[in-house]
Image 1: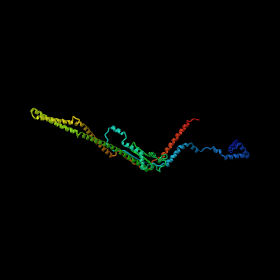
Image 2: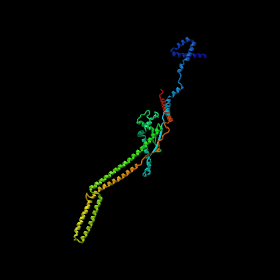
Image 3: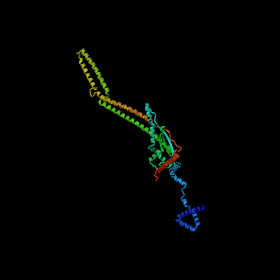
Image 4: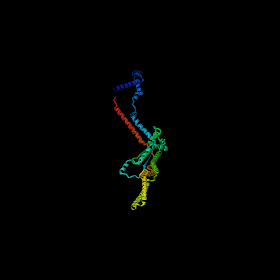
Length: 436
């Protein structure tokens, strides 16, 4: 039985190979098999088909599957594309291409001189401490200037910041201009904002300027230049405030002088027009004369009354009466000079007193304005705010950036997150897709 089974199996294998061979030769199996049996006989046909089986392993090669490595790569191709490749590129860049970046840092505070302050209540002191002090406000102004285009423009004129940022020692991705940047001033300002940091430490109250460059010397010079520009800004602000105070005080003095001159001219014109030097003194003189005349008349009237009683027929009585009448006329005349008419001293005294009051007030205003001007000039002698350096710009001895290993890990983590998010989205879409 075993021999019979082997024979049937052998004949079937030969028939199969014959069929494959006929297919390759485009000949029908029956015709080719009969022709071969007629030419070679039974044993020759068997050897023929055995030789064909050994020399034509075409079917076996065509049905062989892909290698395990190819299958593994094909299965994980998206992970390799989105995670492994970016990580390898980042590792190559940060390890072999990325340029060293040096950092120089300086710290300063803005202070004002001690000034005498009026005593205030506890509540006022509490309210005052809740806001920012003058030094912190000045620090914020200085830091805003450091981050401004004006600071970049001034710094570029003195230190050629554009050339330092475009150093050939830096790689093409790090230096200015970048691959996707232009060479305009706005592009330089954006790059300047990445390389210069100016901030205020809320805990210590110190202002911090941090500069980055592709060499230690460039970072130091840029920081030193910005610190010098900050000091110049403080001096300009002080000079502007001082000049403003002196200018305002000088304006008040000029106004007071003009007012005093105008009052003096008006008073002189009034005296000339009214023929009066000092109406008050002149009125008092006239009144004194009138009072003397009244006293003389009273004495003469008493003498006349006595004479009429003692000697009514005395010839001196008419002369005495005439004298009393003349003195009465003089008294009336003196009284008329002071009051009783539009040309009297009393009617002109009001206008004179108004001019005198105006002149005195103008002189007092002039004195106050002069005192204010002197005080403003005294305050201009000393600086209102000044910049005190706490930490001078340092010359770095080693680069602090880039953090190569950390950046590689960040790229790998970000790529992994993107890959996982995409994978979860695709899996969710496939789960909710219809079966057909």
